[in-house]
Amino acid sequence: AILEPISATRLKGDYKAGKRINIKKVIPYIASQFRKDKIWMRRTKPDKRDYQVMIAIDDSESMMVNSAGTLALEALATLTQALNLLEVGDISVLSFGDRVNLIHPFGQPFSHTSGEKALSEFSFEQKTTEWAKLIKSVIQMLADARNS
Image (tube, rainbow, N blue to C red; front, side):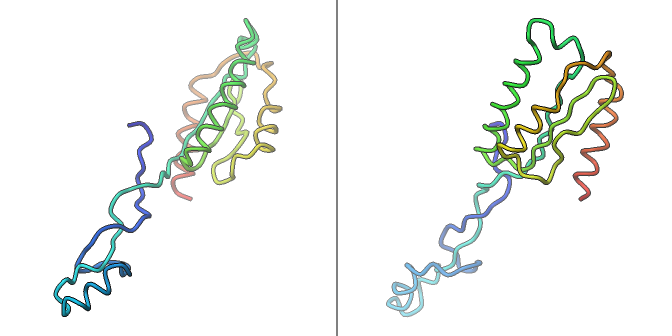
């Protein structure tokens, strides 16, 4: 599966030792003269996602051909809404062309207002697309986000 849950947050199960007592098992435990001692719950199955997703969109003039820029911004809006519904973790958006511009950094929630601000940052007027500069910047940004 894509973007599988990686953090366990729910408590489950019947164990001899664990994090929290299962109240439903206490009375049978006492009634069994303390033999049915599997009354504890643990965090077992992962159910929370904690990823860092970075979305990069080309902001060069070539994206104006056949309204590719408009399509890319619509895809950005749809993708960020889906990622927020899945609660994947941190989302970052950047544009690239002559220069790399961080539009929405990691660590800030991606809301409707930040989405509107992000969409207004794209102009599709940069002259060239510098792929090497993009890769270097992405590697540095991901390393910085991982360390903080």
